[in-house]
Amino acid sequence: EKTLRELADENDVTIGAGVPARSFRQYPDDPTLAQTLKREFNAITTANALKMGPLRPERKVYDFDDADAIVNFGVENDMTVRGHTLLWHKQTPEWFLAWDYTDDQLEAFVRDHIHTVAGRYHDKVDVWDVVNEAVADDGSMRETMWYEAMGEAYLDKAFEWANDVAPNADLYYNDYEIASDNDKADAVYDLLQRLLDRGVPIDGVGIQMHSLPSYQHSREGPEAVGANIRRFKDLGLDVQVTEMDVAYGPDEEFDDRLEHQAQYYRDVLEACLDNGCDTLITWGVHDAGTWLQNRYDVTSDPLLFDENFNPKPAYDAIRDLLESR
Ligand code: G3I
Image (cartoon, rainbow, N blue to C red; front, side):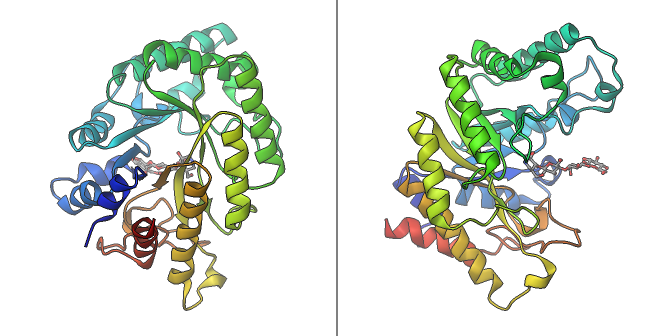
């Protein structure tokens, strides 16, 4: 029987996983993670290691160890490498939050950050999430430190700075709850349209697809997801599903929950493939490594493999879909 990766390769589809540095560092103590990754996936994303917080323990000190480990693993195993993320308002370093900068200083700092990080990996990272989550839930521009200092032009600049040093990488805008017809998705659509009108070097949009009960628009039906992918495609952008996981509320512990989860993964992958999107990344490999562990409000088994790396119904569902195409 063919693996998920073999079927993905045959179909020119990219199936990947976000990998947290901590679990990855246990390799080779825990070779199962590495084996599963290279056997089943043809793409890998740095889930935390390239964020500013983990990467920059001090103002002038970068710690690339974790990021290098994940990126190099991807390169060595012939996987598409996604870098996440150059600019986000969360997971910034403590010293950064305490720094009393001027607008000009912040702009120079961000330019330097992007040049340093995207430049280092210019021949290794294939796809960058350049800017993450710039739009607030109500559809207004999120008032981040980047926005306060530079206005909306911070996005133009971030993409241009990434393009300066990584001209061959695909440059993405990435956000959550934008897979359906809602105010935020509309606002992101308008933002991307403005970026394109201004000639910003953006290649694609990443739809995170965390399917959680607390997110209002997180479990849209396949028609809505497909239609939304299509309208982004019609802007002239590539579309990828970048951080998928499927969790349920404590009151949703119904018997066939894992079957329901499997069906949803399959539906989303099908909506993606039918509408010109060729990539689905899950936000982790196995349930023990999900960011949703130890939370009271959601089930903690949102991924394709269980805590012992056994494939789940969700794995079979997307495998079967690829086999049938
Ligand atoms: O590594 C430190 C550890 O040294 C420390 O002892 C511990 C104490 O809290 O924290 C550890 O860092 C945590 C880190 O995950 C690694 O596990 C941070 O506290 C925690 O905040 C961080 O959470 C991450 C979250 O982004 C931050 O908002 C999740 O792992 C990560 O999966 C999640 O990913 C985001 C995407 O980047 C963007 N889209 C949404 C997605 C889910 O929130």
